[in-house]
Image (cartoon, rainbow, N blue to C red):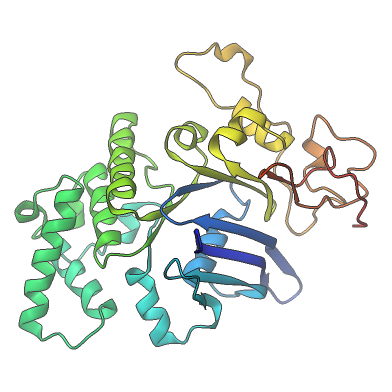
Length: 337
């Protein structure tokens, strides 16, 4: 039996321009457990959204997968599908029916000149399989829309004839979550799903998502900067830096051990409403330029624990009691950069 529903294996993604190429994802290997919530965290430019784009095979041009695979396991028997090898018709089925996404900024994801019903109808018409007659499709859309809108606490009769501009920010975000559930996917990718929402609405959205995960068994991949949200809702955490996975483990281990100095910096810079915030410490410096990465470990110019080995050698991703980390503090072997 296979506990993994998705496996990213030795993935390398580059954006090839005329004079140079940018390596946005650098040899990332990462597994996602069936029915879990996995958070991928890191500063802007760390590769989170590019990684999500690879899972859906929607990497924007001129980006492309140079090497590696995205493997999807439809059931626990372990039959794998290479997403990056699928043909257009197969991809059309995979998107929304197997894996869907709630993009950052609901306002940008909804068509401003179509009603919510029209957008539900169009999505189901394009992505649903089988020969469905027009009358049957309309009935199916209305029935399924009622089900998913009730899950996110919205009134179907009120919402369906409305245009996006008639909805509040929180309502738009809940509509997008309903969209992601429309065709019963097994995986939902959430890219900063509560951006620009107030804290009360954020908490409401994440409670809805947690209920969906628990009651429906949907695997979720959360891309976020908010370490507080990660601590509260995620089962596993992957930390990205400069296109690399630098730490991965269950949430309790990541917050309790903080093996990588970058992970410790992210958590230490997170404010709290109950703790003394006078001890907050920002991570010094700025994220590296992907066109001119530092030698050795890409984090070493900002790392408070850097030593002589760090600028010279690239650290390996090693396993310590089911906890993955890429740092010379724990790597006893030497690998030339």
